[in-house]
Image (tube, rainbow, N blue to C red; front, side, top):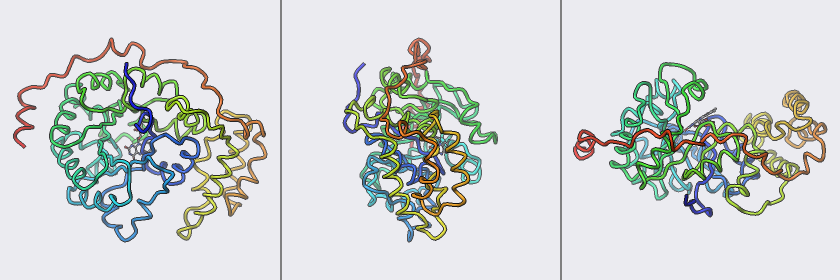
Length: 378
Ligand SMILES: Cc1cc2nc3c(=O)[nH]c(=O)nc-3n(C[C@H](O)[C@H](O)[C@H](O)COP(=O)(O)O)c2cc1C
């Protein structure tokens, strides 16, 4: 299986996560991995348009965060066009369009996100508009289906139409469908089963397109197993957030093949503290100590002292007024050998979720006359 270029390709990316993948989390992630691709949390096109006098607050990022992709959401072509135009000067490495979010706030009132999978013509138009207003690569993030529109052929119809109607060549596939019946966003990320076989069948049926796999990937060994199986890229969300050290710490060496930088958690914390104290209270009451410390809470996952540290952190949020004092007050319970260790070898694959996947791929995509007519008629 040929592997993609390891220099600057999105072999590994951290998923866009509303309320999580903000500037603070991205700063921490970049201190741990130099190569992981970062995504912003989703920004609605309307937010960008209506806040055009305050854009830095939403769109500015520090140069170290490259490569970084902006994710936008929306259902109004004019606003999507203006938002892309406004974002363009910031120099993102890509713009991604959200067709996967099942939140009732988004698919209901906002009527965008995953619901857009039911309207590939609109997605094609939106992607054409985005591509015409930016000079960076564009991509779509979607589910494998929505409600009972969940067959492999229907997924292919969506991909075929969007790629035929727009310059989109890269899709990020969250490999479970979305249920728009009002279950919570959290349940929508665990109840519909993962169907990785749909993802791998897309690689087979659309060899000219690029597909990144997402959903339920929990360790660096699973990331490498997906790449080994032919994935163009792997996107990880919750695991990268919950275990930043044990997951992101391996990305540069085990995925991108660069030598271990030797960085330790103590060094990461020193730099993160300098960053945190420089932005604390920047906008009056925000960000506060809790906002800045939140991304750190998984840093000592399953290490000695972790539970005690978290308990102390909970109290220190209320009493500390700087990140420096917060760390001084809470880190005592983490042993020096933990703070000063570099990333350990990965534990070794406990399971390969893609083993035997090629044996269960759905039958090849059959494009019928209707799909061809559809594309030629618009
Ligand atoms: C709290 C939270 C917020 C999310 N917000 C977004 C978002 O803004 N845009 C998006 O495309 N996906 C969003 N997602 C979905 C993730 O990007 C990802 O597709 C999903 O969590 C599955 O990947 P995982 O199993 O590796 O976490 C969010 C997920 C979580 C947990």
